[in-house]
Image 1: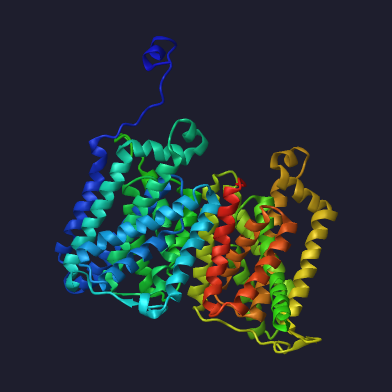
Image 2: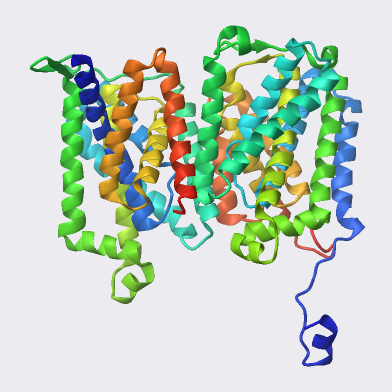
Length: 329
Length: 286
């Protein structure tokens, strides 16, 4: 029955469709603008330190948003640390092989994306906890392999030295991180505003139904994996270039999988603004706590995750009462 | 040949501990329907309580074990009341992430309060060993295995010979049906979750004697328990025993026979989880 027929008959009212208006992009644009202006603020004597925190906030934003893109297709992954680490290690090894950094960066991202296709294909039929555990196990396998390779290959358990990104100029590094976050935001918006949005949402809400509707599950699930993992690898490249020393234990740490997951849920799942906002709030909270306690500052993530699930299932984005803007981005 | 038999025995003894952790997890998954990602943290709490009892009060871990089990049962029941209970009808994702958050919270609280150091418990029987012909078996290991076997036996008796056990199995099969015939489902869930945590804590006490107590000790055991219940198939308690033995023995074999086994044995174990999950998914089991 077409829409017109429905209108002609009984007063059938379609569910209110929340159109996405250009206004919905305003908060996002505002956020990016503020982030771009941050280095030009009068930061005083602690400028270098604050800029570093801001840099890692951008990295956290990339991680959270890329994790969210994967989650939109119903795949709640604990393998984000693996792709973050593969990006970092791929970049370091490509530099060692003599590639210029501008080339090493996208190649590392594509390599990680390629690996994610393998993982995605293998875990295709797993759902819920099985998927989570399989991805967690995958991360540990990758870490153990890198740790146990001969030291001459990937530095073993000790780690690898990485040349500083952009000659160690922290403002230029910040600008690069900002550019990559902006790119991630664009990718996320592209996913939201095209047919991909409907495909991902259909798969997430019911694979069987999506298949009946003609959505190619395999293709879209793998696509989500590829996009998400390549972006996570870019975050890993930023991390490697900023800290100029990477080791398997820290790079592949479970914390790197937990943080994007918690951040997205806290900020607002399946949105673009939510994960970025969540990353900002949580990173600042983490830094504040990190100053006062040595170990266990991840406690914030545990607490925030529990409280979000119990009382704020839609995250920060759900707090907005007045929704005249229409659909969320 | 002696080495081979010795390896098998070591693996078998280790599997007792695994079965203890895994059957607790299987209880939470099977009866309450909650995949408890924080299961390892209750093991960690048990290990630290045993360490505290031994270091501050001078009580042998094996003597404090019943007290610890009861205490952690209470902690588990409390956890159920304040958190798990509220997501019983929520999507599986929310349940999973809630317990995941709980695990991170508990682990990092322990890190914050106690630091990352490992704490060892010294007992007079720590270095003792039993001689069985050519085989030598560590005293604490044999003790742990015996205790695990005893507890698992008790668990089976409770599940299959008592009213409470029958209620648990009924709830596991069909929550609504059980409710209709007058079973207090909420009470059964509370008890099952508490017992699940208590089993983990008992394993934790044994771990503190066999290895050490540290904030992160729980994670590995929890992951192994996941591997075991996945291999066994959800809610299959007999399968848990066989899968535990399989994991324990294959781990021991890798450690003995693969060169550089220490580093690679972790990878083997994770590959095993990964392989099991993937194979099961392709065989059509969910």
